[in-house]
Length: 214
Image (cartoon, rainbow, N blue to C red):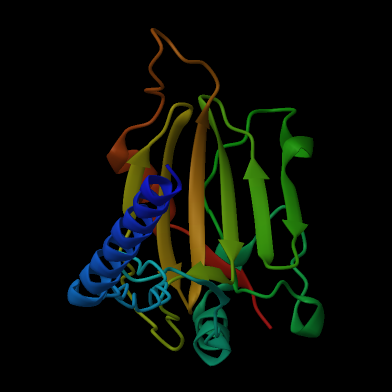
């Protein structure tokens, strides 16, 4: 009985050793696992921000260079009766920073003379004239938009007529300054301001005379 147990134990150990040898041999025969290397990802380049470019030229406000020599020459050549106004325009260093152009031959309603106003401004001036069918306001400024028109003296400046909700306006440049003549209707009928025609507005503007300069 003891011999049989001994044989079984020895046999079991032999089988166990054989199995261990088989597993060791199998492990040696199997290839080692291949390490997979993750691909290196290059850091993203920082985007370069390009500022938006304007579609057209940038219009910049600037102070115009006034052709005072031309203005003084025109003032000297203008007869005194044509320069007669309802108020005194300062001259020299106290004059407005642009040559003063004012309308002539304006019919002011009786009793409305006190409504005539002239006001120097830091960049120019404005003058207001009450009328029968419309009021006239003349503005002059040395604040210009775009190209400086210094020394661009023109005996016949280009007049630009524009109808408005309250009447009309005419703009032009002279001596390097910009001028605007506004016509404000006293009454508007049918939603339309038709108190003055284009030709009438241009005629009033063409009759502006120089009344003051530095």
